[in-house]
Image (tube, rainbow, N blue to C red; front, top):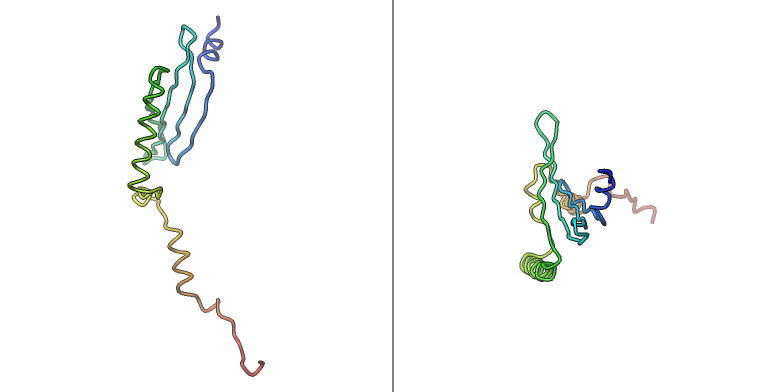
Length: 125
């Protein structure tokens, strides 16, 4: 069997989640015995000062016998975080390129500029 045929057989089903500088790859793969397991890969892009970049990858292998326990714990942990901290992503404030666009809009509404006023002559009324 050719190497390409083996690679095609190994990867059965895939999904990608792009999340800022991180990308998550969810892949169903096959073992040599033709059983299935899941790999979850986090890939994060790092840019060097000279403009070049590289990726760091971390991979988790998840086997069928662990699916139920993994799912239960993941659901419990995500519920805990959302219940205690809500859905707002506050860590974005600490990124170098974070821009508070929503504050700028609020500021503009609170302090209108001269151009936003209409010149009215009460003699015309």
